[in-house]
Image (cartoon, rainbow, N blue to C red; front, side, top):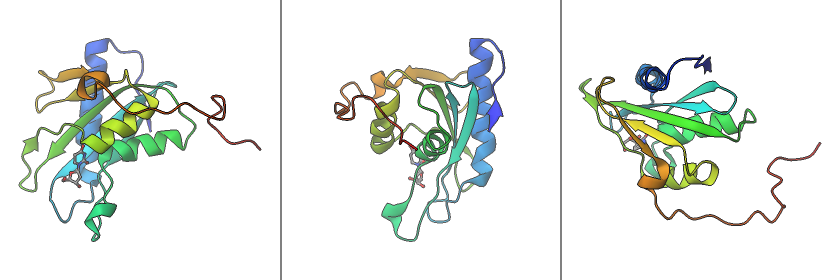
Length: 152
Ligand code: THU
């Protein structure tokens, strides 16, 4: 968890991408060799990183984006501004990684307007709103009347 600080928009996007790239070293990807890192800027200004965590039961794998979201949500965050995603292949090459469909829906729950930063070159990043990547995401009403957390 790091603080993004008061940087300009462009520098903030690059900084987030750098954090995502740094996080790839912690990916647990013994099966695909495809190491993904994510860096999620939350409403508090804190950045939560995440990596993909694979499993011998392949379907139990979690992507880097969802790891970052779960870390942040479990720390009480509910608002999100941007997420950067970086990836490296098993051969150590930098690779493009767009969020998978499950991650798009997962993020949509919390943040349809979040900026998604991808690319292979910090000087030429792609920045899209999640609503561009998932135009018609699924959302239910909150039967609890908007209360998201538990009560003590
Ligand atoms: N992966 C992610 O971490 N994020 C994505 O959005 C796409 C895929 C991971 C899952 C798996 O560990 C590896 O990349 C290859 O699919």
